[in-house]
Image (cartoon, rainbow, N blue to C red; front, side):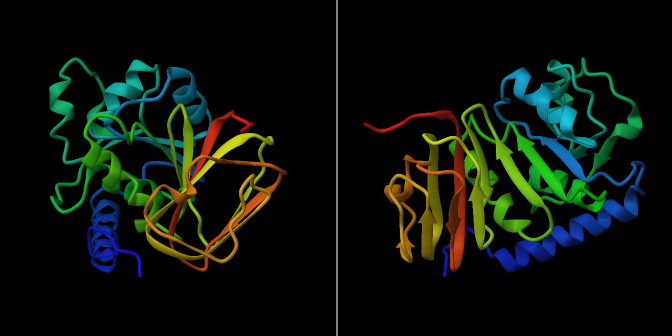
Amino acid sequence: MPVLPFDLTNEKLRLQSVAMVVAQTFPSEFTVAMRALVVANGQPPSPALLRRLAGEADLVVAADGGAAAALAAGITPDAVVGDLDSITEHPELSLPPETFHRVPDPATTDLQKSVAFAIERGARAVDIVAAGGGRADHALANLSVLVTFRGQADLRIHDDQFEISLVNGSATIDAEPGTLISLVAIGLCYGVTTRGMRWDLSDFTLPFGPRGIHNEVAASPATVSVRRGDLLLFRGRWIERHA
């Protein structure tokens, strides 16, 4: 079984409890949102990418201090969620009081609280930005939301280089040949099979390591499947054909 840095079952139960608290404390103020954007408090992407994703979203949620990055890009969040300790570092920010939703649970991160909030509001697709940069432990831990919320919504983490998602059984990659693709196993992944890649795998046991890094689409659409385990798919935003 994959080795995770926390008890995933307890983590899911805890997050369900957080979502219930959010729902009971803050009745929905939004129309049901099919797609949400969550702006975390890490290194933000380019304003162009941030604005594009915000334009596609029905609901924009800032994870505590992520509100500063959203506003800097000209995006006003519909909600600011978390323990709200970071937002106090930005007294210049002016948002209506009803925008702020304090969820003090110390066992979950502001990003987890914000994703739970978006799903509770009806989001079935959640794009996440500003989840990397800065501290490596935070950036690595933030990837775990893709596993924690498996089956509750289609989550994708974005930066200027990659779109990162969890392979939930199988995934189709409709991309131009030469698009860079990396596969990273969280723990061990069993039965990893790819089709349409420069270097394909067949029923492969992929460990946490560099084995799946820096592949490329050879024929579109390419596919990735995994029989068991938590497999992250990094889809590059550029073309890089190997010689």
